[in-house]
Image 1: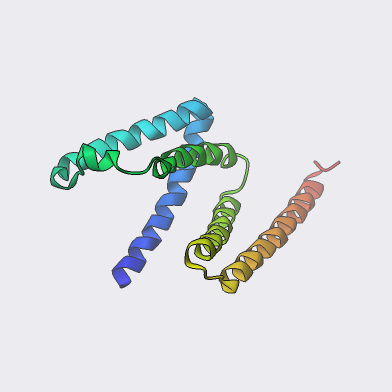
Image 2: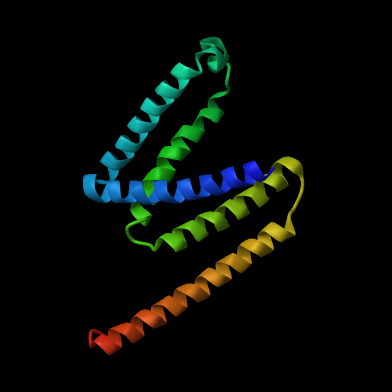
Length: 156
């Protein structure tokens, strides 16, 4: 169990590092090029991984039988990467991570309700509390930046 918790923690770090690298890549190479480079590397990595796992690759018939709506995940992945490439250079990383987490909490609460007929007050309340904390922190950051600007003589 501890191994899985540790791996989940490492994945969390990996997601943030990946998001920041992709954001910098898109700043340097452009938004569309950043997404294309990201997905070309993902494709290459997938091909290499599949080469080592050749015995567990499903047959073409099996892949063809997957309902079309399930392939929308790839589109959502590309769209998500594009949106993060836009956000990362403009929004502090901590806010992007927290907003992503809040979005995941609300989405999981909705999915649980739709598919499992379970409503989680805790997830909704937790998401709202995180959002309130984020707003308060953003206001404090704004005030701090104003004070710094005034003391440096750059505030108008």
